[in-house]
Length: 362
Image (cartoon, rainbow, N blue to C red):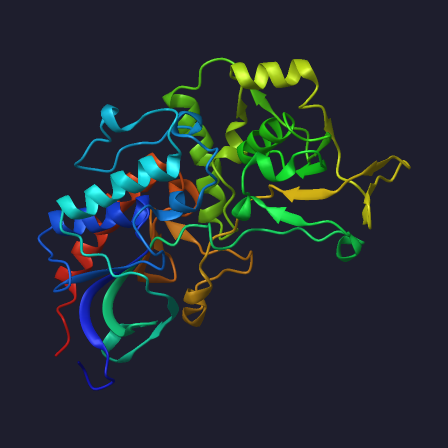
């Protein structure tokens, strides 16, 4: 303990999803030891990152582009397409933490990161305060579901749910359902619910873009570059999926042919029993499901004043431009699973240089 009652450590990693575990793995590879030189804090009750909270009907076979963590492949023997993704990836993350002795502290809530004495960062948590020389922030987005606000929303008599608490299609059996959102989650929810609901209505802010044909490395780099451009400008990041479009597969093709994916523009207002459009169209509904995405969970970094006027944190590679001690992984262009792996390695490379350049203060 130091003079403030905080425990000194070189690096704190916040989050033990794909990005956080990648960072922790590369910290170990650099020669740092868990709980002596770095600590991994995770608010979730068990391994699995955000995957452990995904709905049961999201089986592993429906997951787009899950990449293995560095140093340990996700065995094909464990990837039964019919198993819930939460089980498959939860078991994989558990084995990964055990294999590399990452000793994740959980459940631990991080309330704030602020400037401390001796050029250190004070990381305030539910298990006490850590005094760190550098920080890898890998908190993702799952804890900040985005709920848009529309006129009359508070008057709706039925339940309003978000992807974050989507229970699976059985909950909507026999109901009239409005699904809001044009991303991958929205289309997956809609296609499941349409099989059991009395009626479904799909509403999106922009016309959905369906991507047919191959999506190779070149297209992937171009999509990531668009997200990266926003982050470099200090704007809130958009998801990589938002710029890649929706890949057309057999299920999408069938749903389009059946009219399930016939989209309406955003309604003008919500009524007690449905929604109304500016042109006078009305739709009756029992439930509204908001598949409207998530925002970066970075409120705990607010005391450091990292946000730009555009509302985001300006990042070069993984380093916060306003503070070289802070690295954001799984943020913006590194929000994909393969991007998170690369970002973990890049963050540790820069942190290693920082630790070598700035000897620990006495």
